[in-house]
Image 1: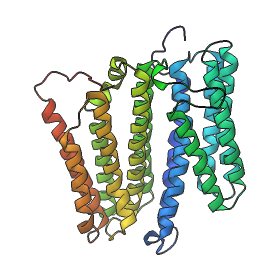
Image 2: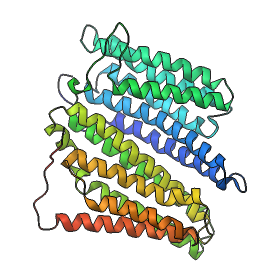
Image 3: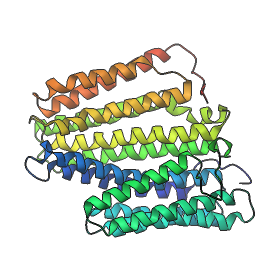
Image 4: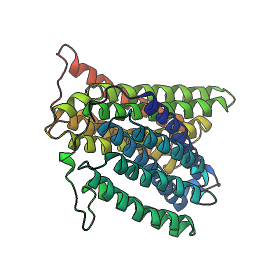
Length: 393
């Protein structure tokens, strides 16, 4: 990279648009698992269905994150880099199309699209780098993805249980290899702390993906409400869903979400905080996905008592977001506000009585708890100079 990239390129933003679609497919699949059969929402099928949907989300995240790190380490205007992004764009679109039936007739489509983008990226970079020292890293990554690719392809040809086992093993292999510097016997490994990245660019990419996930919650709420008869219960559920999304946005941006780039640049090892922020944003995105599923459930059944798995989406989504946001705050400032933990405890304590109330009441409680966190953040910052980043890395 001759010069660090500035703002995200139009091609990168175009790539993100695919994930708006892919995330809506994730929510639709989870919603179907929760409502497909009478009584299913109370059974073990809900847990297994949720686990399979999470597996697909982790695969999507792996593709997006690998592409974002690539454009933050190398010049995104070079042809090899643009080839990487376009390949990931096409394959991500195919993965999104395959998500609803990814454990049946479109399993091979999902697996091949995933493997192609993961294997082609390091191979294209290895060719483009020539004799550069980073070329060895790309070769190790290609070996790991080739090995895990066998698990993906073979798993797609097996019955569902075998498919889940092999695909889970493939993701464990890939995520573990990334965490430990892509170790390969005979080729060595590397320390993530020594990787050179354009920290501000990578931070902006995480912020943009969070906005993509936040936008997906708005789409789900809008689609769900537009399909209903516009009665008062549905209107209240829709209004509370929109309010929840606004609170989630407010909590994210106040103040850590605004200065992640500054924190990355201040860190002694920017790649370490970049890697940590990746895991943190994954937790928050999973929380947003669960929240979006809760929107759809409550908008369709606003005045009915809801089963435990449904309530887990409505309250568990915001709680998971707050846990990720607490870790995010630590990454940027080296401390965590007590309001995060208090809010999570309140959401957990409210779960039992809310099982006896209409679903819209659970959404209202979630909004109030998130609003209290947002107010606490604003009061702490009022009258004080903007807090500077102080990453503990």
